[in-house]
Image (tube, rainbow, N blue to C red; front, side):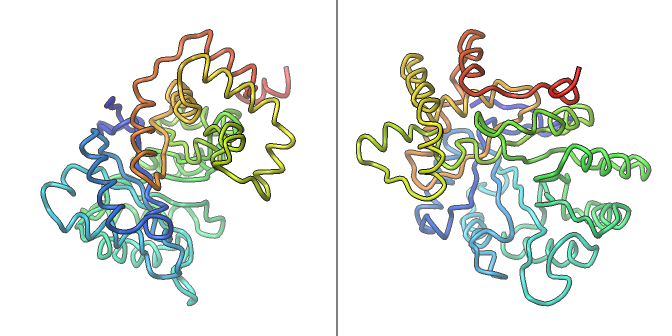
Length: 323
């Protein structure tokens, strides 16, 4: 396993990041525990979750599964860089969502209880809160840091100007502010290259891509369809019907390079500027092993250029759309 620092921090994290969104809804608790054990065996030390995962309001099902895994002992918690998130509504009463100081305090304490730990290593804002001022947010986070309940703060789904706004407000308070940004980023969805990644690099945030296979479209979907392993419907079918030639070119290139399509997509992200590592949310052990294998793939300039030709990206703004 390869490791890197998370943004400008001294925190060492694995370049493969274990996403846990499927734990509970798609993957049983026993299988989830086995996947987390295998992740440690593979050298993965960075686990990502959120208080809303499990998708039953207020339950925090996925955090509870992780908490019971930590409770087994054996150094599980000590070996894990634990990231969770808040923002989504955890109840129907006012102040049970978003980023008010009250919800930050309550949501953090609830996550700590479910996760059976005394601190969160990376506490992330799952979405921008346009109604809460940054001074309020940072004051609440500063208190949590002083209490030892969290170590670092991160963002998710922020625009570039949100990152700048957050960091300038933190700077005025002589506070660290954000150390990471978690965004949708993959060969198909590359809009973050315009402003989010440049902003993250300017302010020293590590970029953590989510949906690195774009809902499985980069995981060999054409081949799976032809083999009868996957039936396309809804938006996936519409996308494949419209972009079949592009996806076929991609899967042919993966075959020529000797890599599985999904592993190639993950490896491409690991070669992008500012990227800490992609989050993969395995439902099975095989999917976890595939994510680990991608870390060892080295792509030369010719391969990267061919991928850019199939899936054209963006220059930083404003050069992408102006002179």
